[in-house]
Image 1: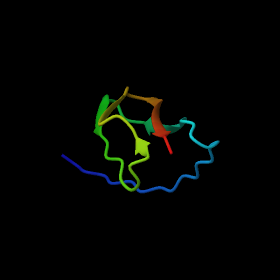
Image 2 (image 1 turned 135 degrees about the horizontal axis):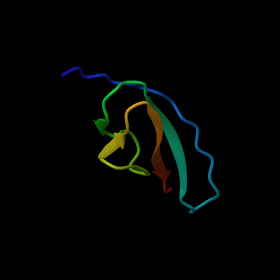
Image 3 (image 1 turned 60 degrees about the vertical axis):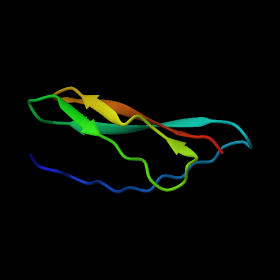
Length: 68
């Protein structure tokens, strides 16, 4: 099993005390479906699912939420 760790930066701008969600596109150009384990680090204001599925030869959107 190969483990790939991707680190990226995102900028969130939200009105005070409102939740916003930003979809992060994940592309799978392979022939097999992916089931990804997700870890959201940093501020406790961010949340997202612990796992995520991306079908073969497609792109899926991982929703990341920010609740100040």
